[in-house]
Image (cartoon, rainbow, N blue to C red; front, side, top):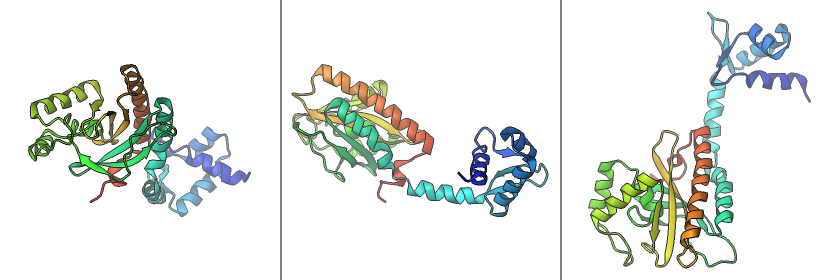
Length: 259
C-alpha cells in the first residue's frame, strides 16, 4: 500500500456534510499524524484545486475539481443498474414479472422489465407506452401529479381498452384518492385481460413523482393471499429504492424521460 496515497484519501474522507472544513492542525490531531505531513498533502491538493483554503480562517474545504468530478460521476450513473438488483430480488420473492415505469409527458414509459423463468408470463416490452389513467403501473403515478395536470389528462378523453378499464371520471378520481391513502395501486384486466398489476409510486430526491414499480401476473395465480405477499415485497423494494434515490439525489427524468 502507498502510505502517502492512503493518508491522502483518509484526509479527503474527513470532509463530510457534518464537517466541511478543516484546519491543518485540527486534521493532524484527528488523524494522529504530524502537522508537517498533513500540511504538505493539503497544500498539494490546494495547488491542484481539489481543496481551497480560506484566507481568513486558514481552513481547507473541497474545491472546484471535486465539483467537476461529481458532475461527471452523476452523468455516468446507470440508474437502471442501481435498481436492477432490487427488481431481481422482488421478482424472485414474488415469482412474478416486475416492471419499472417512468413518466414521459402524459404517458407511462416502460424502462425495465424482469420476468421469471418457467411460468406463464405477462410480457411488457421495454419502451412500451400507455396512458396514465389505465392500469396500476400508470395510475399510481397519475395519483401524485398536480391536480391541474390530472384534470388535463382525464379531460383529454378516456379510452376503454378492456371491459374493465375505468372510464368513469368519478370512479377514477376515487381510485386515485385510494392510491394516495394506502400507498399503492391495484388493477385487474384494465389494460390487458386477465392480468393483475400491483404498483408502488417512486419519488425523486425532491419528493416529486418520477416512476412506479410493479409486480404483475395472471389473475388465476395472484390470489388474495399472494397479492398481500406481493404488496409487502413491493413496499420493501420501494424502501430500498428510496434509500438509493436519497443517497445519490436521483431523478429518473435525467436519464430516461425523452424530450
